[in-house]
Length: 60
Image (tube, one colour):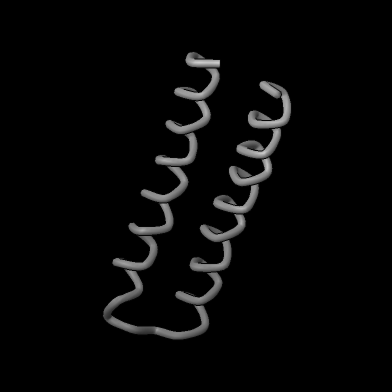
């Protein structure tokens, strides 16, 4: 069960990284005043997913 949960969170880490890259491509394509906010949210999302992985690793 531990391996399943950690590997699922690992896949989600990859998804969060892809979101960061997609936001970066969007910022290059569409110049908007909210671009930096979207980028900050994507990075915050990635950091929170990494924290979730570490917490799950410690708890499990």
